[in-house]
Image: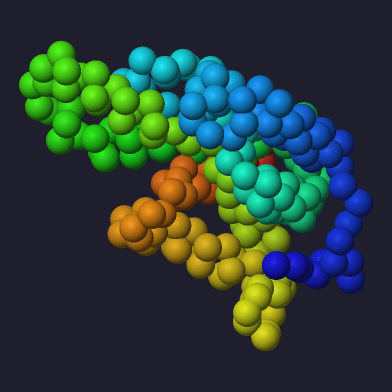
Length: 232
């Protein structure tokens, strides 16, 4: 995916985007150093986002999960997306406002993902469970975790689609340019459909993506309507 604006496909990064990329890379290296990338890692267990009924859940995970990733390709694509689109949004907001915006989108993604957990496990939650069944349930919850900056970055994409709606983007495999507003709406629609009807083995937190995108859109929409310079 690439885009053209003012004749430049790639533009110089900005301070908040650069620091966010550095922070994500540092945390990813810490994951590798302190137990690896699997769910059994103590590091991952502490900082990944768990179901709110899990014994492993901590409130700070709604923030820490967005700096963690499950694989090299996961962090590579996320940081590429942040670099490609985040700098333009940061130029509109300024570094401090962009950082607040980014974090808000990540938290919004976490809240929607927790709601998704509640819906997914609603039948078990409604059942009276024996002690042994509760132990098994906690094991299931322990293995149901969310990591990644994708939700926050989807918020950035939604903001880009709103603020730079007519910017033309090239998306593989389409051989023709697509306006940002349609391309990003399409990406969000795919996440909604994939969340409602997931494929077997799909481990992508689609509703977290939708939550981040919705948060990002609402923030820029309200900002545009109120014409305020700050929202913190």
